[in-house]
Image 1 (cartoon, rainbow, N blue to C red):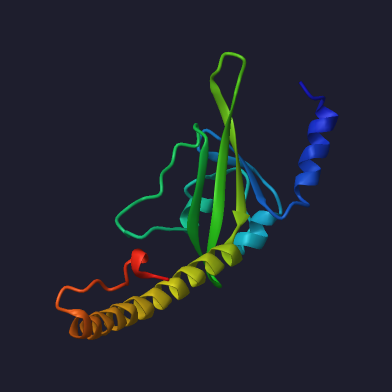
Image 2: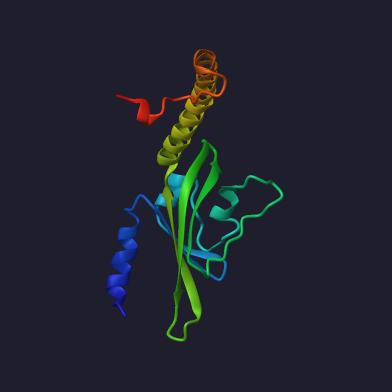
Length: 168
């Protein structure tokens, strides 16, 4: 067990991290580092019910859904959050801490802003989809007209490509 001095130093240093670090116990956020305010644009008053903390920022695809994950378990997901300035993507990791009797005590949650990386992936996917939506019809059109020309000159059921055995 680390000494109280080491634990206090660790807590003080957590304020310097870019990632949001939360400590949650019994549905209450009992610790939030300074990065919380940077990410969400507001201060997290401690203690704070998790529903009134970062849960309220989670944007779901279906408005009738509620964001609910079991922070008693290991969680590793990407979520979209809605803040005053728009939307951001966050990588949410949660790790439970248990006592010597293997009973849940608390969970530490790390939230990493992955907005730029996620937007890059989304843009690359859109570019790839746009490319294939153009290239596939073009290829099919070319192959179809080429097949028609080939079958006209070499017989009705001529193969689209020459047989390998006929190559020099």
